[in-house]
Length: 172
Image (cartoon, rainbow, N blue to C red):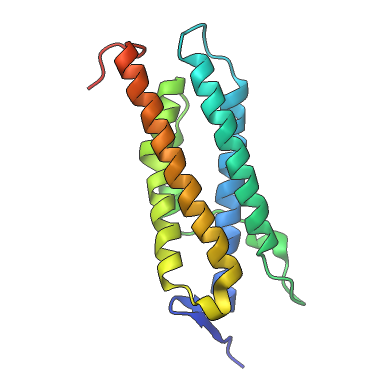
């Protein structure tokens, strides 16, 4: 018997894979932003600002990872942990934007490189989800889209403030 469709974009199995991929992404972002928050790079005036930003980001990604984990299927024959793998999508192709470097480069990689495609993925998935069958997933998609967009705005604001204060020297 074939799997039933859950929404316009796939089957229950495909939904489980997508949720597992989102869980992996948020766990990854939790870990990397947490590492950045704990790593003092210099005595520069922006180091503390970056650390606070990354600490807040890490907490948000931890919360989303836990919420995605709670949405993984609980069915006989389904190994939930096996679903939490890097997604086979454009989301993993953007991971290179989170390269090692200064707090400035990490900030730019996160808020201009990685988060916008993630927010777009959440938005697209939310637009094609079926409220009758995907409501629990839609709640996390909406939260992920909102917090991701807020994180981009806060990061861009931090960047703009740094430019205004001359933290980064000449940018552009």
